Amino acid sequence: MTEAAVHVKSEERPFGRIATVTVDNQRRLNCLSSATIVSLGQAFTKLSADDGLRAIILTGAGDKAFIGGADLNELGACCADSVRLFITRLHMACLAIRTCPVPVIGRVNGFCLGAGLEVAASCDMRVSSDNAIYGMPEVHMGLPSVIEAALLPGLIGWGKTREILITGETFGAEPAFTMGFVQKVVPAAGLDAAVDHWLDLIGRATPKAVRNQKALMNRWERVSVEEGVYAGIDAISEAYTTGEPQAAIKAFFDAKKHKAKH
Image (tube, rainbow, N blue to C red; front, side, top):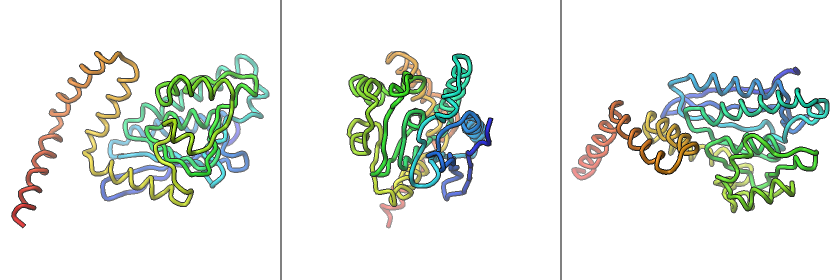
């Protein structure tokens, strides 16, 4: 495997610690080799063990690409067995992103194609530069779109999923927003401010509540609506064992009383 190109930077904010994970292979539009895929999964596995972490930003280095896709040079040399290993590694990296206990914000800058779109789909929220290009062009390479492409029907509906996967057509940021794949579209220069806005909102919430909410939503993806409802009842009961709801509600009323006096 070639040298991995994933960088992790942590920083302290007033509300706690955040991390930025950057895929850096700018000569090839940040495309994913086996080594980079393994490194990406390992980064998220390590970050998931940090109890003081509040959120993660996932992005691509430079301004040309988030992740331009899988490394076609490597895929071109694959056989049936080696491609199974490659795509399984990619799924495990995506799974590490999806199951990370804190919110993961996809900061999408430039090309977001194939494997890159699957990585973006694994994030909790996505903000896009207005010049981003999206697509699942695998059918043009003799391949079906697989693994985390299975998340797309839940994000954008079956009709759009079928259109995107069957035609392999690329599309811009505004269509990505209209179909619901990304939640915000901003000029490239405004990406960091848009991410910071979400981080500030996350920071206002209590840490355990945010983690519990993400865990519950991940469960909702796997169970029936009725099972999801009862899982929510369990989750809210468990929240009270942490003491966070009691403290937060008391703080709310204390602030209200203070405001009324002044």
